[in-house]
View 1: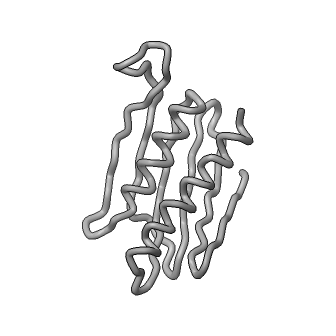
View 2 (view 1 turned 30 degrees about the horizontal axis):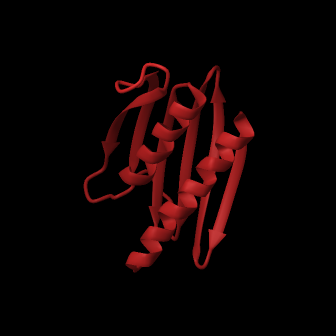
View 3 (view 1 turned 60 degrees about the vertical axis):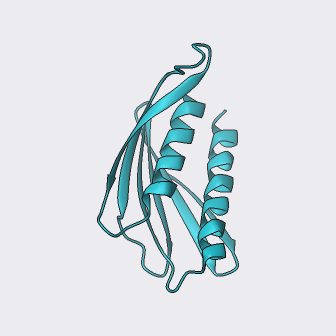
Length: 122
């Protein structure tokens, strides 16, 4: 298992990476009350637009009232496409009284952590 964290302002996001054979499981948590708000599964496939590019198909299971699907879908889809492997992601990030710019910062941190995983895996 590998753990990556990134903190900006009052937002800290942690990604735990677990290898499962050739596949990957990512647990994404952060904020005041980490939880399971969404689970995604991405499987790589040829791009529909260009057969020379790997894309992914992503399935999403989201709990009612949670907005963790954006982060979970981004992470599993991006990793599956870039690494050409099945990726499951569980995400639960809760920031009390989050402002719009903090929600945008959550995505920015998520993107940075995802790029770190890709760069370390290639």
